[in-house]
Image (cartoon, rainbow, N blue to C red):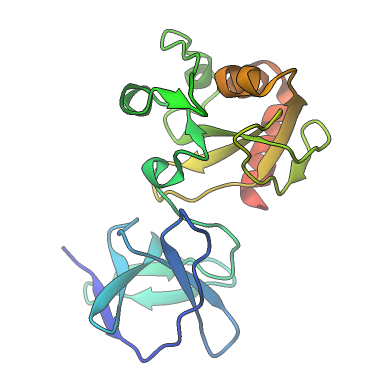
Length: 218
């Protein structure tokens, strides 16, 4: 397997979030590169810091505003940088965030103490092209918002307000949160927020477009 191995003396920033298990480094030109404990791409940038390897996400080709790396084979990759995406796995995100994904449902059957409604036979996400490139994720919060508009909700075990985002499967990058609606009880939010998010994504084009836009501009 081809990869680029770089040993750098770096000052790493603090954790991006308690669950993301990601750190970032700032290059001399001010560009910020997010690093993760788990490799999210192949090949990947390898950074050795105090005996621990951290990984930067590489994508094939070039892109404006990205650092370009040429591999020994001649293949060119771009280092994702200057982005506010955080990276995590669906297992890192739980228990604060719920993921619409059958294996996850099988492994973590409760959210805020409730059994989440999951209809595995509903293939609407496939029809609109969200599945299998992205996961839909939801969170119950007490931060209010405006329907289909972005915000920065904070998880609450007694949250009444349902928020929704996309997670890209290929690298674990998280999109921005969109407000769905205020539920009647915390128990209702825990049980129904995920299917409500899926329903709006499938059935409401305005919400679906806003969800992808929030991913592009988290």
